[in-house]
Length: 154
Image (cartoon, rainbow, N blue to C red):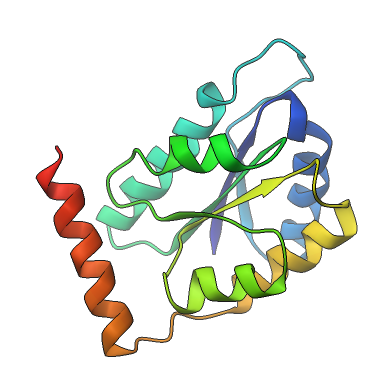
């Protein structure tokens, strides 16, 4: 599986750790930045390229996901969710990781470094990646409703 990853200064250390972790799990990782620590950088500059790459892959029928990281993960999810086809979820515990995939088929995971340890983040990433969408009719229907809303606002 291909994983796009991006962050600003707040998540720089975690991003570097997760890149190695994901590669050890057999993932192909593409880093969209930040490529160096810069306390004055802006997270949308790195999150948008992740979301855009995931959306483009989805349009081509490819199986890729994204991981975005910030202080809380909230702003990062907001940016990612502005891209058509993206369902980014802020994940902070096992339940949110599992449900974001099982019920919402989230294709981008958003993490907050100020709420997670590196160890906890790795566990959540692995759980998120291993959890499959349930394919239950009610969840498929809800995702289709979300897509309709998204298309109405272009």
